[in-house]
Image (cartoon, rainbow, N blue to C red; front, side, top):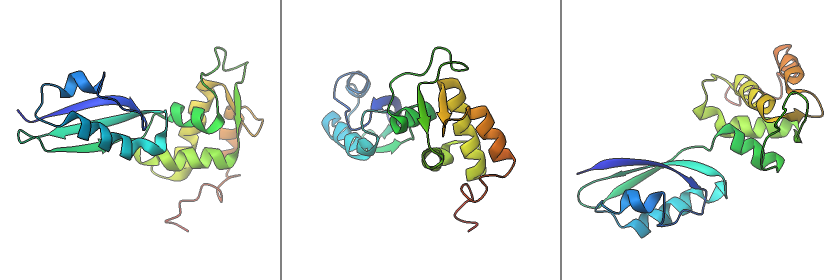
Length: 162
């Protein structure tokens, strides 16, 4: 009867109710212990939707794997807004600094297809385009061109290469 459950939970705020409770109820695991461990491990992502995988065995033992929240959630948290723009090409809802773009890229890099920090930053900038978020007052598409031109090579150099 061993199995796996995958859910999205608010960071640090999981409860024995839905979505976890109904999934874990029929299993042999201690639901409260699972909830507590998830909350401990997701506390840094306070309030953000975090992907969590719970693997359990017939003896009631379990392991929890916490993923990284979606890029859009990290950007919203960093910039301090709730929803993206309905017209992202025309109406902008927030502005990020280059350092904030770097921070989000570093948090998300392990989950992205990018093979280095510079390309991870470009993926973050692409999400900024769809959310209607500027970067240091500039349209994110222009900022991406500046990354491509090498203007931020020092900023987005991988630490391993440094």
